[in-house]
Image (cartoon, rainbow, N blue to C red):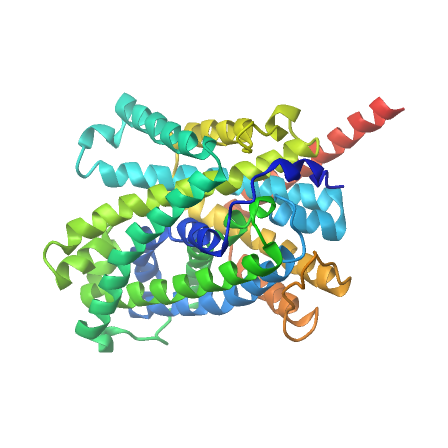
Length: 434
């Protein structure tokens, strides 16, 4: 069961603007700068279709998050939702799997950031300088988070403004200039190509599960969580679709092999645009890791709070932040980043996120069916308690069916280890109580 009484020590500092910025920051990370080429390589001139279909898959998932998040105020996000709906074991598996995914995605984006910086500073391409750069990066991010959620929230708002402004200008300008006839929406080469692309797109759209973790620090979760979730998701869908259209229309077949595709597309619209977007990409990736650390550390905290991790991880400092959880997440992610592989992490993290989304959809159904509420009226999914969750589960199972054998093995291995850890922990607790 949840041990949420300790959450009362958190500072209730997150309002709708900060929470929306947190969601946007975690979603708009490195994916949008690396995926346009990957999608074009798989789907050619139909690459924007992947983001459009991905949006149709993510909208019902967002509604499920809005419903569950407006009913459970305990810090932990999907961990808390499944715990409240189904009990400790499903909650633990969801929370631990999500933490593993977030560690991997943080490391992957950090590796992508260093690859980008290596274009300007070749010394960080490998060796000791690369490791030193990772250490400095994660030290700064941890330091900012240790000041408290209010400081972290303000930094996230600043990152959101810095990353979104150039991207919005590029998308708006590009849509008025490029030849939209270059897009072939329905020229999909094969179902297999579309399936692989959809897993990558789910990775690009993922992040809401991380950004909504600090529910214990939201002023009015029943109102603010649904507003932030829906507003941020709509902003990201429009932005991603527009950027992919501009990239595909302006670069054509060259997009498939361009590792700085968004910047190259911006350069075709305005000469200095390429440099500006490269800087924006660095800011965006850093903002993602900031939001990832802000949310993911709270998952580790919740697992420590409830006895699944060492009790120190579940401690809260005098500033009202889970300081040891922040440090633990930063150290592990930094270690993984030194050997990160972006492409593989995209598919594994995206697939594992689909499993988490299935769990959240089921939790939203259960919580709405049981009429679980906070002090204020929660968000209610249209169509009753079952329709939106059923659509969400069907959509995620369809995406999961496209994973390859090695990707499934990685995910199932992680699940097997988590189940074993849970039962070992339960056995130890039973032994202590006997």
